[in-house]
Length: 262
Image (cartoon, rainbow, N blue to C red):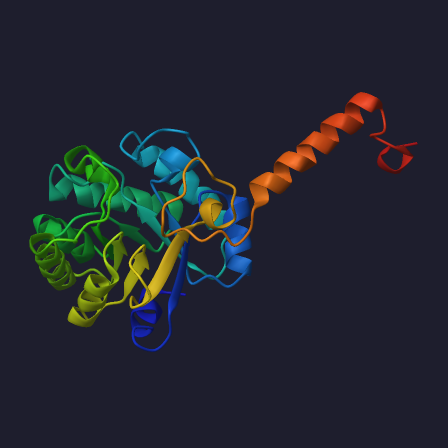
């Protein structure tokens, strides 16, 4: 899978994307036929147990992206640019995007924000690095928003999201993630741009969908956003398996001769 193939899927075939952070989860997603694997800065919460994405560093993104690359043969790999890796100025943004690409072998980077980052997006794309945009709820701006509530519910916010989508498309993004926005707004954005939109909590009218690997498998249950669908409940099964293992170890029924060398 490559960037032109993803772009060509708009209005023809829905795009599937999962956020994954390591070799094992990437391999599972890739073997299942996922189109895009996003190495998200949400690893700050899912993998590191932090309360936001803010503390995640470029080097941490690279560390996880390298593992994902090892487990992926077919899917397009996109890596989040973490907080303050692109906000200060576009020169630093290009350097950080290039560092991520060179050290991980990924296919593209993703950054949050609209019109205010159009120059930055254009600079990164001009350097030969594909960029995925991200509008709506932008977690790196949590300290400004104050909550993880849906965005674009009032006319002013909705108008800005539509305008921002056009600005970042003009700047060169090949796709746009729409997070936690009303489904009718997501539909308007999708119809307003020629690049694919990928929704997470944005309804059915986007060109694709993304969920976090650990969320959709029921491995991460610290909290459950409205948009998450559990396709399995693996944490519950894992806890029961560990309980059984512990019980067998303590009572001496594991290991048996089957699991022992002569």
